[in-house]
Image 1: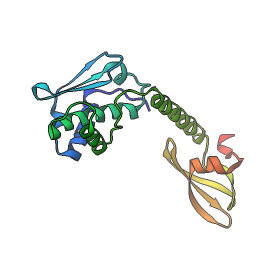
Image 2: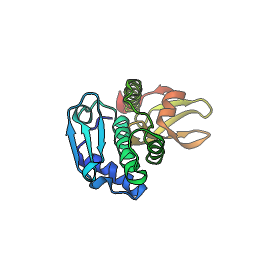
Image 3: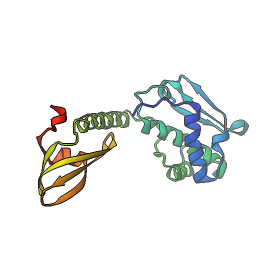
Image 4: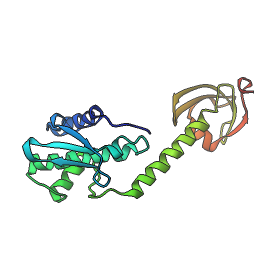
Length: 192
């Protein structure tokens, strides 16, 4: 999923974390730099501040999950500072990570980035395949036999098909499940 992270988008996640913790991290100053090896930082001096790397947060190909993890990682530093007086990546910081949903790891991991890129590419490919289905298509279900797709709802990989079967009646099925487990017998006349 492509996202450019503005200051407001980061603050929205900080507000969500504040609601969970009762703290006020969303009110702290946020700045951006172009660091290559430091994705984010929390500074405890002068009331606290966050800094994030534009090199990553302004890259639409950088996985959303990793950006959220960096924001949560730095928020855990903020929480550790305010609640426990801690700094660094010690036990209290790891407890804060667990509370806010951050991965309690210290360094950036290219393997995780590769995993998310592959996951998103597979989701895009599935979404493209699902976009090929239309009302009127005839599918062969492994237990219900042949059925006609009457309606499609949803978007992306979260689409559903209402399929009418002669004996089983109408069923609402995940279109991803249909794509994986059913055979397309005939395209609708609308697609020919």
